[in-house]
Image (cartoon, rainbow, N blue to C red):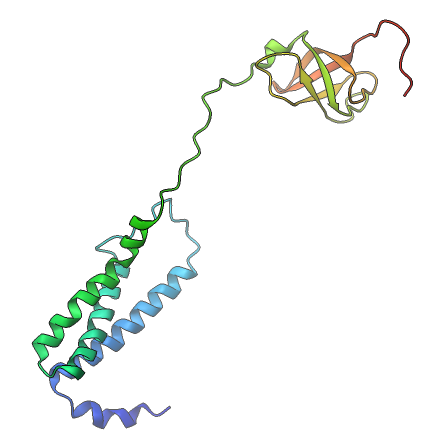
Length: 196
């Protein structure tokens, strides 16, 4: 592309028209570079997504749209001052567009943690419950149990120090490991054992 062909036409313009063309092209290039840099930015935004009026995006957007709309207005209306004033509302509107979008968006509700007190595992000692997920023998892996306590979560991690314990079996808590893993043993059934 031979940009030199545009120089004679550019030199025939008035100084104000030349200034508007230079401003429009330069601010468009700067805004494009800024937006590309923001797109590839790896830094976290720290939760602040509101645009700043004194920020680079606001200023570059304003001057880009102001210069281009002033140029278009100058084509239709030869008066320079009228053209410059015609471009102002479009520049301001384009620069404030991110604010308008954020205002129109529905606010996102933050998830508030429940005020339910945390489960005290010491209360689980000697309590009984039912096995939800298979517990391997001799501490070889974790299973899950549900305790017969009102405050207890539905499923808690558990290990067995003896035999394997199958889902549906009744268990008793005999110890707590690492403040969050229950050590359980099967309850002795009265009567005949059910076959496995």
